[in-house]
Length: 135
Image (cartoon, rainbow, N blue to C red; front, top):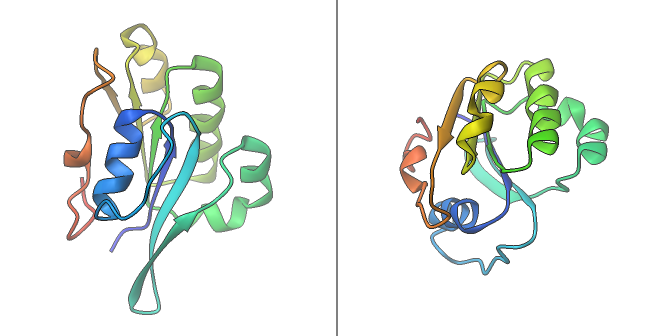
């Protein structure tokens, strides 16, 4: 059972979170979010945490427990800061999902997987197997 964290905004990020939540949440695509799904004490728990890097720093020890982090972004500086943060934490697998192909080489230096798409309408629910949360 893997604990996951999904960070980002926009249609692909919202689509992935809603697929995990069985579409029971109404989410704003323009707001950045950090959604988590964890297995604790024999049950899955989910929720949202603050998504800024400053707040991540304060929650460093709790964030160390995530097995996979999915970062949806198109802003290079912001993405690199978050990827580097989780890389330094020792997160098992880091996925960067972006529409910008030109930054993929840079992301690959720290992330385990870089997925690029030319469309903001791409659906990414296939990233996560809902039963096992294994990519």
